[in-house]
Length: 414
Image 1 (tube, helix red, strand yellow):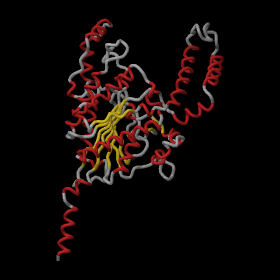
Image 2 (cartoon, one colour):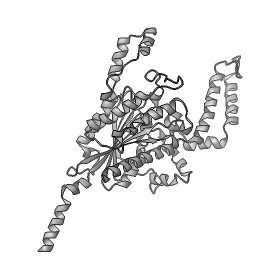
Image 3 (cartoon, one colour):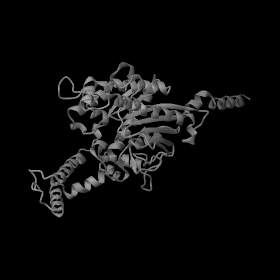
């Protein structure tokens, strides 16, 4: 009799709220602009295996058949579209490669990856519970305007901006109206989509158990390039050499608070992926901007629940060196067509065939065959997209996952 009572008690414990809580769907949100979209072509995966330090990462990213791995315990909902927000659509399924940049075909495999791939694989390995990634990303979007959080208030034009527009003869009222229309638009797209997915998680994640529910377990933000190059919003600083990006740090803190409030997750672990374009050798505005991006992680209120992850260490320096040579070739092509006085076609008499041959010789002397092959193996896009290097994006996703897991562990230990 005592044995029966014990068994009944044990079975009841399995159905208790605490047990159900342990099975909660783990939800992670990823958001940002083009680098969160991800412009690394799958064809650059082999390059990851060339480095003994990252070869194990490539093994995780591929199945036994050599094809990109499919995370059996992780699913993704990916809202994206054109940079202006038109043609928005949702891609869903088990997490695998192909959920990178998709342009105006958001429901189709784009043949690219961003940080979501290794991030999701890491989370799938870390939890016995099902994992759901909700990714919202569009190229060319800024924090100061399109992703501007509600607490930041309306975009305010400086006196210098207004004077410049007046000088250019622009309709200031029309410009302000357009800015007001764009302000916060992608922030709203993001929040609306997350809420839509979480209203019916089973639509995307078949393994979701309504009785167990879900937990918003983390948020990853990877953005910044459009703010970095925005000289209107961020004027020259007091030193006269670099722009003052302090407002970005203020708005980033607003963003974190607003996202947590709007999603009902007050202590949700938050990762700021600090822009790493240019690598560790970057200077001037880039360094100043990185400090502003990371600034919120130093605030007392965010201690232990916001982490700034530097992505500059993952920049592919050897590919960047080749890209600088490729840029010289691009410049030479321009000069050959512009009658530049300091270049061979100064008088404009070179034929198209002569220009073609000259450029071919110039490139072959500048870039070795080995460098050509290395570029093909490891790169697939421009510098502002981390050279489209899958190794870089894989390392970023891994670092974002590790930072998130560390915060989750710290919160659980309290």
